[in-house]
Image 1 (cartoon, one colour):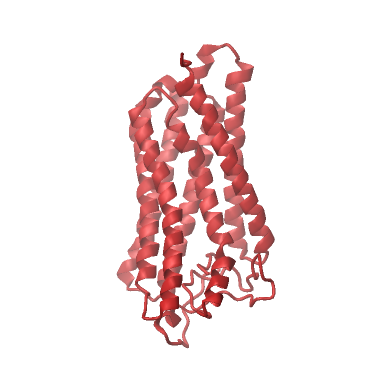
Image 2: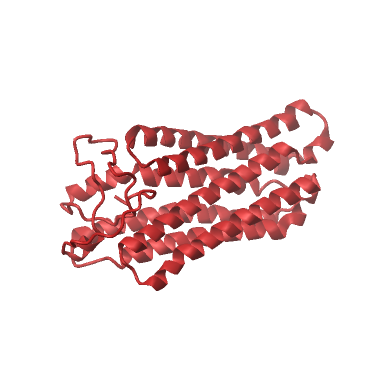
Length: 320
């Protein structure tokens, strides 16, 4: 016979398990980032550190909440429905992680469009993404405040409007980020086969990054609305911040691999630049003897050289 706690504390523990695994993966990626890219711009390092702090707070307070429920109040079934301050802190930390990553990619898109000298009308895209990111964090803060005020998981379904707004804005934001990257990269395709292969690789990476987090946001909405008075939604909510963390770090840590793939395919210094990570970027993980400067001119995608390169943004990462 199934336990009556399967849909609540059982799912809670599974969520903790998944979150812990993804947090461990994030720690490894963080270590590799600081080990491989020691000369990255301080702004990018600060973003990574803030992201690490948020996710550390999230998993720590989620564990504290679990300990409070199952150990400190063992046998007290009334305590199982109490929303403590631990839950509020871990919830807010997760929303902040999502916001940090979305704002980072919004800035990357802005720098990419600027370096491409894109039509000014397309610069509305990073503004739109920023607005969605602000809506997401605003709804997240509101949900945290309302949930804390309610004080009981039995009343949590009353926040369905705010919860849906938060997850929906995150979903649309992730899809918009992915769409912007793919549209911009696809617009730079030329008759050069090797260049198109590079662009296809970058678009695949963008889709893989964005669709996973978008799927998580969609799953959060479905589970929250379909299974009230249960914790099934936590299977998507708790790991979501870790997925954002890993997606951003994977983007940063694969730059050298993509750059070397570009060299092996004799593309030379052709790339889609999102700006320099630093004025003197490190060479990356695998080949310290390769040229350190991995920033390349967007105009070379069209098969010619430009003597007037666009402004470089030190706060953003190169695609290659």
